[in-house]
Length: 92
Image 1 (cartoon, rainbow, N blue to C red):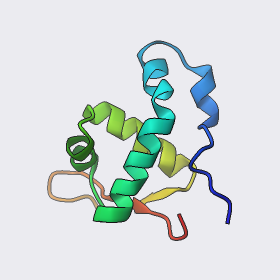
Image 2 (tube, helix red, strand yellow; image 1 turned 135 degrees about the horizontal axis):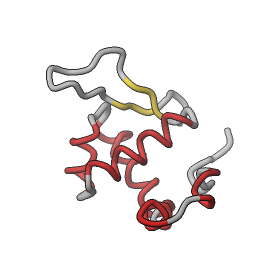
Image 3 (cartoon, rainbow, N blue to C red; image 1 turned 90 degrees about the vertical axis):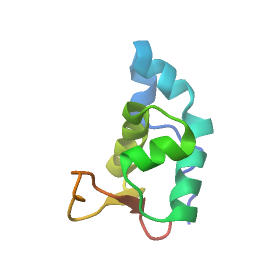
Image 4 (cartoon, rainbow, N blue to C red; image 1 turned 45 degrees about the horizontal axis):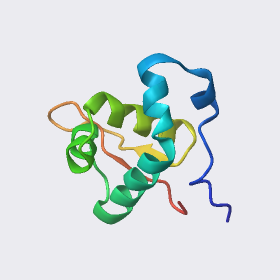
């Protein structure tokens, strides 16, 4: 199986401003997010943000990237607060 943990999101090189600063952290944060989901199981965006000391919008940015590239999947239903839980796709 191919290890994608060291590959950049393709759009990371095309962005600027604050998002560019977030993208620069890609290699450091990616492993932390994936390890957290591997260790704790399904988590919401606020739970990931709290666990890693990230702003919620940054945690959301990472999770949406992982979702887009099929590394995580979202729960079918949102919780009572309207948050979906994200977990690793099997084999990740």
